Amino acid sequence: MTHHLPRHPALSRRSRALSGQVRVPGDKSISHRSLMFGGLASGETRITGLLEGEDVLRTAEAMKAMGALIERRDGTWIIQGVGNGCLLEPEAPFDFGNAGTGSRLTMGLVGTYDMTTRFIGDASLSKRPMARVLDPLRQMGTQVLEAASGDRMPITLRGPKHAAPITYRVPMASAQVKSAVLLAGLNAPGVTTVIEPVMTRDHTEKMLAGFGAEIEIEVDAEGARHIRIQGQGRLAGQEIAVPGDPSSAAFPLVAALIVPGSEIAIENVLMNPTRSGLILTLQEMGADIELLNRRSAGGEEVADLRVRSSNLTGVTVPAERAPFMIDEYPVLAVAASFAEGETLMLGIEELRVKESDRLTAVAEGLKANGVDCTEGKDTLAVRGRPDGKGFGGGTVATYLDHRIAMAFLVFGLATDEPVAIDDQSMIATSFPEFMDLMTGLGAEIEH
Ligand code: S3P
Image (tube, rainbow, N blue to C red):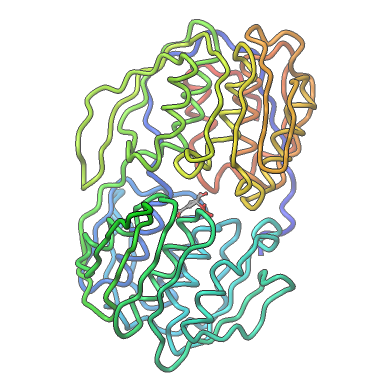
């Protein structure tokens, strides 16, 4: 297990104007799903642009352990899948490290198989709530043979002989929970229905349809989405080009906004509307972000972004937008620190169950560096100072959370005094190229 890695601090300092043209690695959500669906489908799947971060590589290992043949040839990932319903019982536990998405989706995928699977992870993942996935699985017939208190890892599952298809209303805004139930439904006879009152990222639905699953979506009078999947159908291998991750693009993007005189381009960024809440919010704050060359690629919209440093003004970010930018609040709080006036973020209680309690981690990090902010139960208010005067000089506790680490290194690029983070090692889970990409743009980061 990856529990006791030595800490590896880093430090960023006020930088001259950033410039250049970059590509960020492939989208993490789509990368996990590409490997899972490719490993499950019959025939060959070829993936280009896959995010080769630690989280995603663990999903590849899990699929291999269940019989998929996966190899990387000249940057293309080639998978021979087992066929829907034909996953093999793994011989060893799945160690998902830091990866919430990989572990929760895999629990759904295997939970309806008549086999035993065990899930372990690092100190961060072992604290995260898994009941949200285990509850619907129990309804489908899965036994939870082992779980730490509060349904946390280590977890051992035993699937039923025949799973029961269910109708499940997702109680929180979570694409991971929605996806876990849909994947469990793939191996249940009949139709499994997920009701999603609040729309979340829709990669699972879109990609499963692309692999040939019988899936239909209806929106009811209250606006809830009813997603129905027919179990035990055939899935067929696909060609997938993974677009750039908007959640990774967020870091150079905000860096260019807050470092005076900057102008950068970020190419080939996924523009799915369930993922682009940050860009909308920053534009409302006055950010100069141009979307160029908008095009469709592999069923998703992508664009190139041109970003210039901007004078930002605080806004209120409505609760309804949270699912469309859920991973971007740490770096939004950084942008808000350099905005005129207050930025108020509403309805963000889900931040408390990410890789860390991000609401507390962000508030602590900002306060340690002189930013005036208030943490509420499910809100964060940041009162900015455009010149960044008096900011910096503190050390940020990252709590094994890659996005806390990257957000605060970006913060330090525009502060008076340098900003230190206690650990950079987790950045490799989602954005292994982060340091090279940022320093290539002119960011002053010691790592
Ligand atoms: C993800 C869903 C989100 C997000 C995570 C990736 C996914 O989690 O925070 O980084 O790929 O489905 P929740 O479903 O817990 O909101």
